[in-house]
Length: 479
Image 1: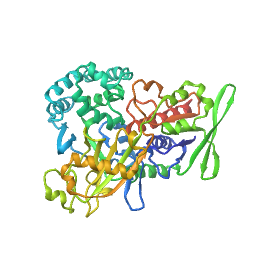
Image 2: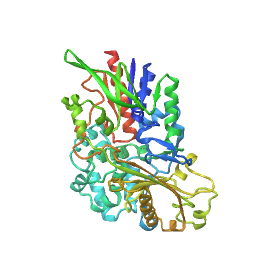
Image 3: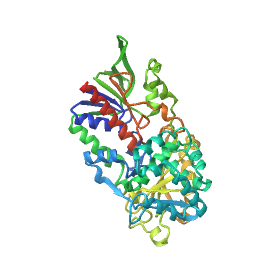
Image 4: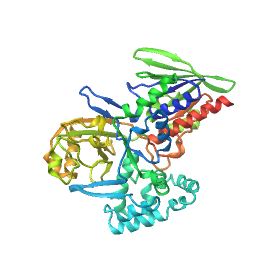
């Protein structure tokens, strides 16, 4: 069976792996010069590894880990300390420390009751809210709890949290930074389904809250092993190929795709296959779908979905920004020093960040140089039209507020990547508009983390969607 896939992000690559394993002849067409989609990375003219975003691997990324193990990339993950660290103004730290002699849910209870990020009153109200949530049912009936959580999509997490006794302090100091990190929007605007899905995994499965990060850049340590695996199985990946049109015909009241028009510069060609997969992001699928197909609600609903803007900033220093205790260690350049983990903050326009020279040293640590902070500006709306220099200076000022000792250091380089449309906006009530991977057109399928899958828009969500698309295609062969 010949399959043409539009998009070489994680969703498209995951689809291709399962299809190639089943013996299908697969071609992938990607408009960018590199694979990876929103997880893409590249090297600039000065040798800096630049990323589309900050990519953290939660322990509940089961499908992604399975894919990485298959292609030989699982060993490229670096395990981090089982603690989620918050950085507050003035260098004050707080944490959700999950380290405990026993696992879920007790390690989570310990983390929330001992955190210095919340006041005693906030902790008590937080306990009431979470204690009256579907998560409690999930301890004995995971599937039943997930069904209840899915039905909470129509309200925001903030509204749900307040109704269950949660406090404004918890939302501001803890849940907003986490919501921004997960979906690039705050608790007032993110679906309760989205947040509670994550909490459910954290409460039931001890490993779910464990964090890992790649040894180096996604291009070398995640995508290359997948691309090599696919190449060994005959899959062809074409970059700088923009799909301009989906061609289709109607016979006896049934619509079938007959080909896709692919452009390379000014040259176009029509690619034919037995099945076609659009593994695009939201702006990509909205651009490429034929207008005639909007007569089907499954396609028309896609235009009701929105994507969130985001800006990712990298700042290089001549010392170690997150080394808070020792001035000598902070200024020396013989070895990396500081906090080797993902960091959250409620006191800056970037919700989460990390020092990649520490967390992912193979590509980001440079002898004789210091920290390489990677910071995600959320929401990104105010920054998309700003100049890169203005953004870098704004972020630098906020870094100084979080780490006063960093004023002793110099910023030696910066990079900014803007995405006007990034993750699917997981707003209340939007889940109903997400399409299935199988569509009304029997030889046309969808993949992408915005499509229906029981997780958030993430690397895991993209992988799940791709595997579900491949399964739907292979089922058509059996029929």
